[in-house]
Each structure stands twice: as C-alpha cells, then as structure tokens.
Image 1 (cartoon, rainbow, N blue to C red):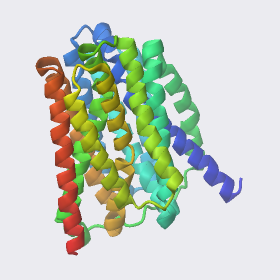
Image 2: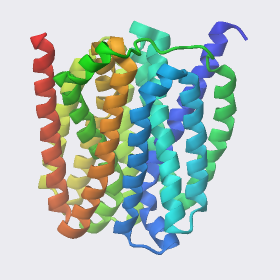
Image 3: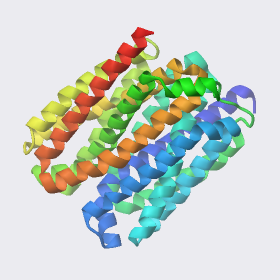
Length: 382
C-alpha cells in the first residue's frame, strides 16, 4: 500500500473511532432509566456513572502529554481503543451497579486518550493545513452523537452491539496503519513546560473547556429526562429530540468543515459562544413550553458544535512548543467539567426542576464567554 492510500485508510479508521466515540457518549443519556432498572438503583444514582467516567477521563487526559513524550501517539491511540472496547462490552453486560461503574471508568479512560491522541495525530500529520481534517474528525463524532440517542430510544441497550462491532473492525485497522515512529511535535520538558503552566491564557482556555464540555454532555444526557418531565413529550419523543440536539450539533460542524480555512477559529469561537448565550436564555424562558424548549435545545446544540475543535486549534497553535502538554491541560479541564457539571445538572433537574437547571446552564454560558474575553485580552497583550 502506497503512502497516500495508507493515510486514507488511517483517516478512515480515525473517523470511525470518533464516530463510535460520539455514539457512546451521546447514547448513554437516553439509557439512564434502563441502567437504573437493570442495576436496581435510582435514576439520580445512575448519574454517578458520568462522574466516574469523567474522573477516569481526567486521569488519562493528565497522562497523555507524558505518554506521548515517552512513547508515541500510536501507543496512546491503541491503548485508547482497547479501553473503549472493553468499557462498551462491560456497559452492555452490566447488571450490577458496581460493574456499570467499572465499565464506565475503563471506557472513560480510553475516550479521553482517543480524543487527545486523535486530534494531536491530525495536527502532527497535517500541520498548518489541519483545519479541515480536524473539523471533519469532530463532524464524525457528531454523526455518532446523532445516531446514538436515536438507536438508544429505539432498541435500548442493544445499541452497544453496533458500536462493539465497529470497534472490532477499527482496532486492527489502526494497529496496521498507525505510523510506528511518529512523534507529536512540540512535546517539551523543563523550562518551557514550567512557562506553559504559568500562562493565564492557557488556564482561561481550560476554564472554557471545563464549562463547555460539562454543558455539552450535560444538555445532551439530560434532555430526555428534562423534556419528559417538563413538556408534553413522552420519553420516546424526548429521546428523538435528544438525537435532534446532536443533529444540530453536527450541522454546525458540517458548516465549518465546508468553510475550510475561510472562517478563522477565533471567529468560529466568538460566533458559537454568542449563539450559545442566546440559546441558553431562551432555554430558561421557555421551561414548560414544548415548542420553545425544543427550539432552545436545538439552538444550543447548533451553537456548541464548533467550540471544541476551534478552542483546541487555538490552544495548540498558541502553545506549539508544548502542544501535547497543553492538550493534556485542557483535556483534563474538560473531564473535570463533565465529572462535576453533568451530575450537578441532573441533581438540579430532579430536585429543583427545569427552571433551576436551565438557569444553571445560562450562568455557565456567561462564564464561558467571560473566560474567552480574558483569554483574548491575554493573547493581545503579548
């Protein structure tokens, strides 16, 4: 196989990985009540699954810079896919709460490694021309996020059979096509790393990641329960709206992928966060109104799509001399957001109702915009 074809096969495998990544991450939300019934615990208690999964993701995100520095991105991605496969098999088989949590932890550890490793692989291979392949990677994640909730609402936990089958094809393909000696540029130690960790700009972007990831997963995972409890929709119809949320999410990534390099990452970020603010305000004002709640949910989904890849690209470009470590910091921050914000959102919904939960989302959106304002001031100051 020549180099061009080998790269195409590799990209197809990476795309497939991110497809499954989105499939699993978004598909779990509509299965909360199923997991509760199988394991004999309350829906609120099942929310601990997100905390455990996110804590495991935090651990692997914190490790990724060192792993790539000591070994290479190939090992990181293969380890990631192995963990995701084991985790999904465990979720499918879980009939006790303990096994459910262990499976979520193993899968979460792999998901963060795959997220950071896959993106750094793209940046390393394509360099300054990474905008389109990076956005396409997240577009495939979005496709999986659309499919996951729909299948979950239709065939329940059997959706994991589809994901596991895809993983059994993707894992050996990655093993055969990943470059064996590819080093991600910019992994540094010593003074440069110390300087990196003292940068206020990096930590402001870490806050953006923390708030954004928590909201993205939180809105996606709790939409079914939120609409079923506050609108005229039943749980099946609410599950379809969850798929529509991820479809809107995917649509915005399709738009920025089609735009290629004509729309800067900074403009993508500003537009997306501004639209998120509008959507969050409507989210709060339309609690109990079925049409308004659905429109607000879809607006938020569309606004969220470009934020993750745009922020990642800005950070790795800004800290090119320590890209792996910078990616580890913001990835860890995202995991902290998912670990804390997602279960808090569930508790607020269950105990405080829809108005309290949607108000919480609005406050976090304002915080995300404020963080970018200070990050942008820090960049311009230099």
